[in-house]
Image 1 (cartoon, rainbow, N blue to C red):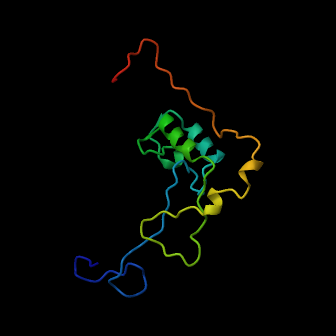
Image 2 (tube, rainbow, N blue to C red; image 1 turned 135 degrees about the vertical axis):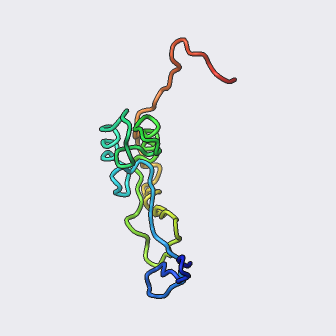
Image 3 (cartoon, helix red, strand yellow; image 1 turned 90 degrees about the horizontal axis):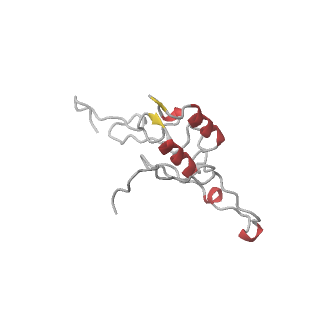
Length: 139
């Protein structure tokens, strides 16, 4: 890479020009607090700003439309109780622009399935009803 004057750019700040710039980032839908996990604290941020406009990600606007609404709540609900590891494991090569994948240990529990007594939903199911007098569109 070169600047407008033709000088090689030092992308990785090692003192030698001509190399690529790379950086690490992550995006976890529903993580308003940016602590790499979606939990009650993120739900609180969303609830405090629910049905308001002019908001951004830390306010609970997870789809970027400027309004905190049901669509943002859906994103949070889909990722509730998920998290990303704090840093990439040693020895892994970071791919520019790639979000870190959660460790398998965080995805799969070591508890056997037989030991699970009761499954409790994280959030109650949402029932969407057609308003009285509304006509069905489409099929």
